[in-house]
Image (tube, rainbow, N blue to C red; front, side):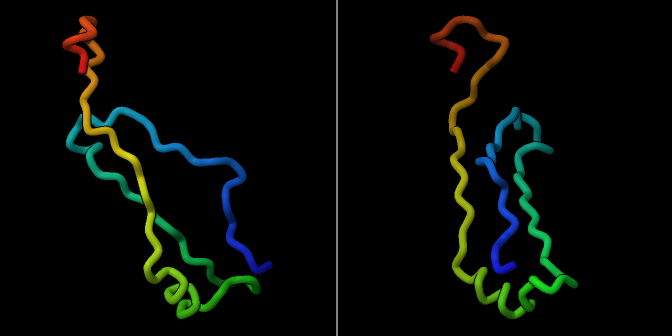
Amino acid sequence: MDRLRCPKEDLVISGDYNSKAGNTLLIVFERCEGKDYCKSKEEIDAWLVRKFLVTVTNQKNFLKDVFDPDKRI
């Protein structure tokens, strides 16, 4: 098996991150180890060079408790 284990549907990041604890997004990858189809650490590291994750962030705050449309954003 010479392919990545990829999700079958698009992933979406969403939620309310208005607290200090929620200001950081942590994405963790687990290295494939111990299976016949796993690549070596060196091959994986070489493939990861210059790879990027791109996220779109909202720079406006939406005040959920304010009902006036002009003051809500």
